[in-house]
Length: 348
Image (tube, rainbow, N blue to C red; front, side, top):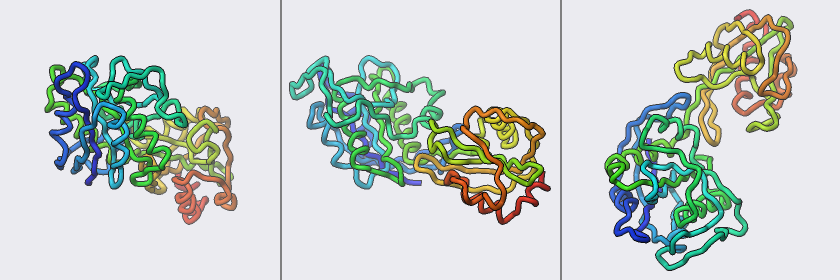
């Protein structure tokens, strides 16, 4: 797998004779790095071997520099901005940018503004367009990395906000999803050597160009009347109101059958008997790729306790295609109709 990263660092500013972000970024610009990475449950990878091409530039620490980067986002798979935070001892992955500038020192053009918005028409806060859960999981055991919610109010935050705002307003995409972009604050090389910081940056890049892969199990729960259970996603969830088969993600160290039993207990408060696997499919959502495995199931429990759904219904073969299914489930519904509900009932 290959990907192209727009990578930026900053010139020295304030009392700093040099800026480690400039040194770090210049060491990677105009190079291609082969990176081998491993999945971190519950998120898999499209590929464990990735070749990352770094293109980009060093930005000036002023308004012109903060605005310059958005002019170069064509034919890019992800964006990583890097800046120095002299107050940290770890690498900070910044998860959001604030629509506010409040400089404690002048930037390199002499500009020092306080309590001012970056864009009058923009949102107050914008989140990284990188897939936060998989990035957090991948680096959770790395003592040199922290997840941060505060990018400051200086030119770093201004640059980050302009990038995220441009992606939002212009609808910039990569592989049918918002272009992944993140800001990384780095410490002095006295805390973490440049070589180690470079390795972390390369791994981050290799993960950002991919869509995380999630293993999901679904229960085809059939009753004595040969009807199958569908559950309606809660209105406060992603794609709320759509219908789905009960189930969920397979956790680390968990078998698919154990995951299915756990999910049905958590979602519906029932014990199930799991039969055979009825089929698998893959669905490419905007933010991730889902691998689904469906199993025929039965239960002797007569009452359900809905914890994550708004409603449920037992549907027949005649009803199946009239339900507003999740995109990932509709293809499998058609497979069920080919199998026939009678055959499913006898497979548990």
